[in-house]
Image (tube, rainbow, N blue to C red; front, side, top):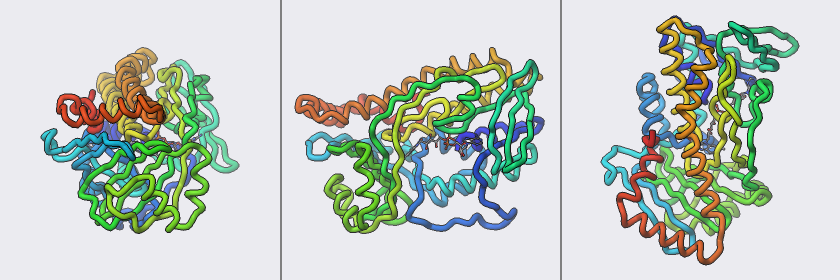
Length: 391
Ligand SMILES: Cc1cc2nc3c(=O)[nH]c(=O)nc-3n(C[C@H](O)[C@H](O)[C@H](O)COP(=O)(O)OP(=O)(O)OC[C@H]3O[C@@H](n4cnc5c(N)ncnc54)[C@H](O)[C@@H]3O)c2cc1C
């Protein structure tokens, strides 16, 4: 998601040549034909902040993207079994929505089709990066496609290869990883009530749960954080059993859960690269920082990084400066670190603050949620984070 988005942002400069390398094979998309959308009940979803939506709108992609996206008009934050509850309303914040929930599969297809239409972008899918050698004027990437090995040279390599990031290791950059000992169980469900464009953030005894509105009446995405080990029973059990356990954990606020898709689990850890700028290389996306998904901030933060890097690279290109200048990349990292650390602390703080059931802390949290609901000025910073407007 991050690599493709950055490539699209950079491709607006016709003189720049970009190569996107991806280990897995992308689906074949016939030019001019409608995208092969298959309404499915098993897709992952991403909550896109207003800032992210605005970026895709600027790229001319929002009309296509919105056909499978759903606006978030209200956010309800509450703790199961306790009195506290906070509500954020887009109308109160004077915005048309807090953001949009989109199916990852659709986002991927639309971005990929746009990328394939860029004359200055080469897409090498099914190709794995296995070596990096920075030089004085170029960085050389060693690439493998099956048995075939070849090299590519460029003034700059952007390592956007995910939390485990082989490129980060190849560049000799370490990362601090703190496992949460939790997993995110992800699925799509339907409730007997329409979702009314409400996103729920519910803190259960097991961990936080997000229930987000999707296109289709009562269709919702569930991201349920659980202690590692507890997910297996919920994945393997019958749909009826899962729905009843979900109902018991979430409560009745969204209505009755009546249908579920298969469940998938993602282990959760906070991973932060020790540095992002390297000579002729920069670490981006989950490779730079992988967050807990509780607040739906990971990709939105990555997108703000993409925008900051793009503006520097396009300026360097316009002025004929070196695109891989270490000083420029260091300046990019310095400019981004505050927003990154704020979002990391914000997401991590929510996870830790709501994963402790000490009686005093529960009371304080619930009093906090009630106060937060009564004091509009306390809501504003959170609403701004949700919308990606904090920078
Ligand atoms: C359950 C869950 C829910 C989430 N919900 C939200 C949300 O609502 N809002 C939000 O903002 N964020 C959300 N996130 C975070 C978001 O998913 C990530 O921030 C985003 O996927 C990061 O994308 P990326 O491109 O950096 O990494 P990835 O998606 O991991 O992509 C890395 C790519 O690199 C490729 N690759 C790896 N190694 C090589 C190699 N050697 N050679 C070539 N290619 C390679 C991989 O195949 C992969 O395609 C969520 C995360 C989870 C786990």
